[in-house]
Amino acid sequence: MTDVYESTEQPDLIATHYLTSIEDVTEHLRAANRLGLGVRVRSYLEADEEDETLVEHWEVELYTSSPVHEGEVAEPDVAGE
Image 1 (cartoon, rainbow, N blue to C red):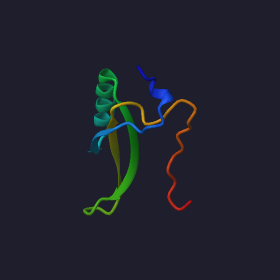
Image 2 (cartoon, one colour):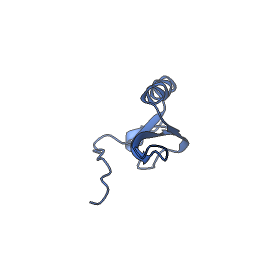
Image 3 (cartoon, rainbow, N blue to C red):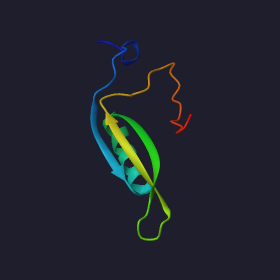
Image 4 (cartoon, rainbow, N blue to C red):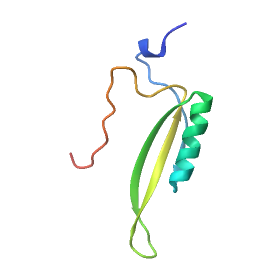
């Protein structure tokens, strides 16, 4: 059996979910944890067309195993840098 951390291969992406509430994100993370799946979560802002405010949304990607391996540091994506 090969240890996940010894492999340099990226895990397979199972699904991507676009969510609008932190409660939904939390539910997805708990389910992924129960199933032993890897996750990557990103948040982003979108303009609300009705009242021209910014609304936070989340992207949750589910993987067959952790997308970050031991020794790697996950750095946030920063636009414009």
